[in-house]
Length: 626
Image (cartoon, rainbow, N blue to C red):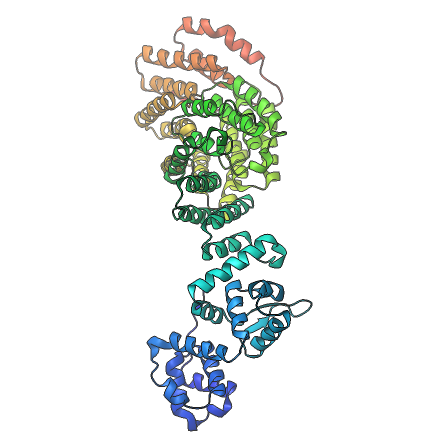
């Protein structure tokens, strides 16, 4: 919301304001008094109003009492005047102080809990007095009224004048009363209630409430708000003296904050990785009986790993092997199907998803969309199954499963889950080279980032858009857009999709005759995929490398070696599109009849088993001219 700076009133405007409020002191006969009011208030209308009211109530010695004030003490003069006016109101002053602790809104019932020493009648009369004196207003005039301060500065001044011990006691009374009965102050959200606990010095209770508030914000996709609340909760944990209690409270905040960081900043971001690394250290020193409770920490630690080789997943599964909990076992398979996909074990990925989705109905999957990787497990399972179905030659089934992932993500209403569905849908359109459908999802990604701060989505959208542009004739600008997007992606996301992106960029580099750079990029991408466990795109990287070696007229042995590696990996992974495309590249090259003969039957069987109803590739890549 924009802030508008209002200029203070000048001398003439100050005189007019005084005349409007108190004509008896605004005349020329009181010019010295007007000067003093202007000096003391600095032209601030609220200060002018309060001083005029005070002057009317304290006619004697006004000039002497105002004379010492200068611009540096305007606030203190205002505070003094306000307190002097309050002191004259008897019990109403105590009610005003309780109201200042209650906040911007309160009612008679709440004030009764904060001021039990006064009768209901006394508090009601005090409210009438404070309204008449100009301190309070009725917020809701009909029915049982709610009240508020006429100006935030009045409330702040009264609040700041309270002794610290008295403030804490009032905050504690409010937190206790409203905590037992939220209907006492239904306008108070969980975060506001947590603030009262913090101000009362109830740090552990405040952390608990801030974690609940962060969970509520995350569930309605208010990511920035949730992050701020939960980071504050983690900061408060440092004020908890007992190590055991502090650890449990930190973990409770980390469970909710981690997925927000992975969704907003990206799983490869420094904040996300550090949070989960710290969290696992704490979780592993907790009692074994608690491990199911802290499973989201283990899961996030696996999810943010930059090496997708399954090592961390094995630790997760080992630590939680004996936990009999449908949700834990579902989320364990959530790890498994992602690992199987990255390693190119597509049949196993599909099987793990099928088992996991059956567990989803019995566990807490629907309620835990925000806890595991910042996305819903069913969305992830349906999306990964779609991608693996494409690899095994079932494009129509892949499209259907991805449509289910998108539909379920939208039903959750959870931004992280919707983002996850969009990213995977974009990847499927990329696999199929369906540029029209891909541009539609890019628009969805950009629209989502307009509503939620998600830098990782911006990077992905830029990469996809650059590739589409390059395939629409804007090769140079598309290439540069991809380079920029990849630079940002490397800072935010884990590397499992980088082999795909590198292959896409190599395609554009080939068209701009930057073949050496394309070969270097393919080599580094293949090495990284081998080392990091993201092997699902390896066959395509080696096929594209073979084509570029042919283009450059390199040794036939190098070309054949690259093609053999591509075909062998595709066959091992049952990656039908890559098996067919690598074999066709081999055939068109006229090289190694022996290798061609060895795989001929395998390729023919793969082609004959292709699922009808949709094309594997919508827009085949133009042949590279050798």
